[in-house]
Length: 126
Image (tube, rainbow, N blue to C red; front, top):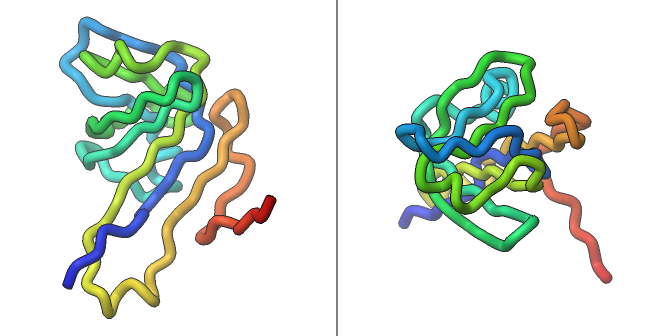
């Protein structure tokens, strides 16, 4: 049996550009991609905290240390500059691999600078 497991997450990234007349994808600061372990052309899911939109596209590499998060092509209808988003990628693992696997979680500030990284999401009970 295979399970789909969270591989990486860029948490609360801010959209810096929304480019409708572009071939598609999401351009992401190369340093952020490297830190999260997301590869160029890898499928990603984007969850928009501003409007609830959820969509799938792929990552392309933007210039390092620029903070660029550009939602491009048709997806530009789903995110505007300034929107807070979560960018996630997933891995298909065999069940025996799951217990040893740790995701790469990257937390960002309003300028898309890394504030911390982790390999687990803290459980919050209300």
